[in-house]
Image (cartoon, rainbow over all chains, first blue to last red; front, top):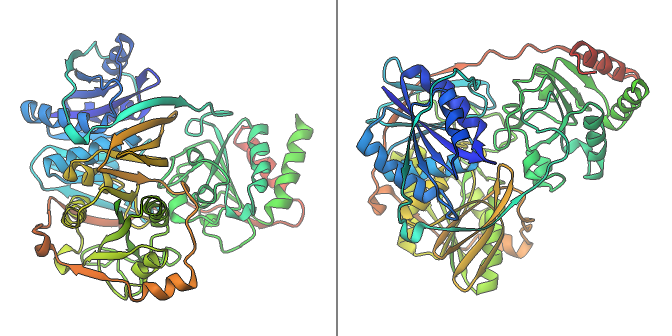
Length: 315
Length: 252
């Protein structure tokens, strides 16, 4: 069978998410990648290394890629066939997946953590904060469209040879088109949230944006990244890029420190894969304690400054 | 400007959600609330309508119940609501939802559609994109700092490494994330007026949309819970336990 993987170029390379998907896709046979971006020999080598056998390359230039990519991918799927198309959780992944599903009139199963192709396509996803696993059988005619959660699979190079690369023209999408006028890269301070070995996150219980400063300081001392819950992002204390949870990032650090976080389902699903979870919360009934390896029932405004002091003494 | 805003009534997120043991759907009480994430889209819609002397119409699919959530949205200042409530739409997938909402919006006419990126209770996070394909309009997703001028809409779209400024001609669809604006609180006057604002109710057949069935839930199982560890009460020295745990994890 042929599996397709959607790959968006991020800062000159295939997205990390697309390499994760290749690990899963190559176990099912040939893998065709639909690649959106400038493209380069280095990118093709990386894709081949991770198991891609063929690459269709769409360079949208200054066009917003979602509509042209969906139109182009729909045409290629019709001519080449394919049993399953895998998307990651990136913003453009979601835009293209949604438009493609509507264009093809096919269901899109989102939030997948596993895919089984032994008897038709069956997709496993987790709902209600990761407390329930749902198996969904796709009964519509192929291709099955599946969007996965970040880090559902581990990216792994297998040393495949260079794939065949075919450039595809940018289709005219008429009034669905949009133009990218400017691009801005926002430099983030400290390590990448999704790759950091230590993540220190804060919740509404910190009380204010100023209360977040001790979370920053603790993260700095541990050379970790800073995260937040949806509540504090909604409140404007930290930018959306800090958000850990269902509608934000998924993190699996070595140590996750949850400061004044109650443990709502939406948050837990983004961090429950952490190796060690330390939680500090005033409320002894906070759901976060049910998943914490070490839970401290206490005031963050007391415990965290003490911890910061102790770490400074060791430095 | 004619602005359509998509909203959803959901069970109170503070309560524990229960699934129907037979069909695995979330059990929906009669009194549902407005999904908090929709308040951002409503606010943007209201601001743009105020600038252009336009109107804001709410569109929602799902069981009407007491209409509590819809009234909450009307109380913020929207002019009217169109609700698609139909027994055959129960358990609909994202594509059917997108087809229904698009058909209802197209029927009313629109210059701009505003939707949240995803609901709090369902979160497939792809309905706005599907709607933009069905309506054949640009999908300005992950949007903040929205400006409309001379028939063009310009936004900042969040990306993996920052943001990009994206521009398109109207009609268009905006999908906004939470936190992009400060949603207004309903005034007492707004709450009173909301009680008498028009709410039209439609069925799937009114819109000529057949529910789409391309997937079936084969099982729902409990995920093995993470073993809980030690919980201690801070009596002044709990931070030492944290230091010890950090040492064991070899991060200090």
